[in-house]
Image (cartoon, rainbow, N blue to C red; front, side, top):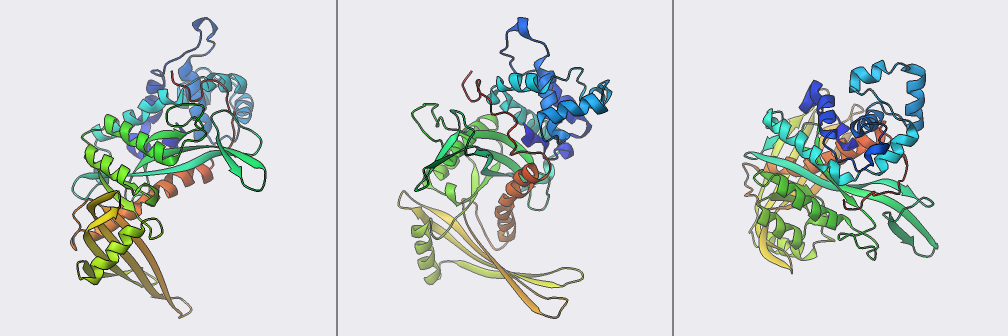
Length: 390
């Protein structure tokens, strides 16, 4: 649930903590009632507060309360939580909480934000919401492992490394740096069907599982899915169309050779819409930016998907004179496939939507890993029910 702590106060304000506690009270508690020392919601709130307050370990969290908050008044006032478990107890209880039992909380926050019209400004391209999907890692070790770890064998080194990874989807905006995580799909060593003879799951499988769950939770939501070139394939696009979801997916020449070959032929035959737009940016240092577009319709994605997609080839050239009177030129290139109708009138907005895919990396993963949340710290690897179906 720490994904929810990438500054979602914009969407929920002063009610954020109260809502967390309300939702935590709905999480199933599988413990023996006779052995329950603390309510589960108190332990979940303690775990949440650990990340909000950016403690680097469970033990330091416990020690801080012993020294600075002996009467628990600070903790009670902020988190409305009368009980603070020891680091050992917190680790033991949280170890038995099945992560999927927390999934509904992402939907609750998103639906609440929609109901309160807190995300209206995130609508783009005629009422669509931009949802960026990507994977990252949260644990990596050469020594510590569990049966759910992904295993990577290094050829020639007689070495295996272990890791935990996940994929998440995030509501993004081209210019707003505040994002709203929408869910998590773990990539585990059990594989898609939880069969122990499947060595590794993969990001592609997690991507499809996330899509299915997201569509089930929000079947009528107008969504544009943003993703990298790994997911620009026939399987993903056909399923997105079945769901009624639109897409802007990155493509690369090395990965999509047939597509780029067909694209080159269409451009050579003058079957592309080619145009440029220019703008001036900057206050102290004036910069001239040229946006060059090549838009081609009806391009076959691959041998497995001959139905045409729209390709947007984009090049951004920025020119300026440095304070030392030196002329500078910077060029960036991007290519996407989409099912949207792209014209010279909306190409700039489509381009900015496609580039906003990076917000999941910049504002979600980077915040968690470098913003003091100790996201990659091993708080306790766990050995009970970690990813097992309940």
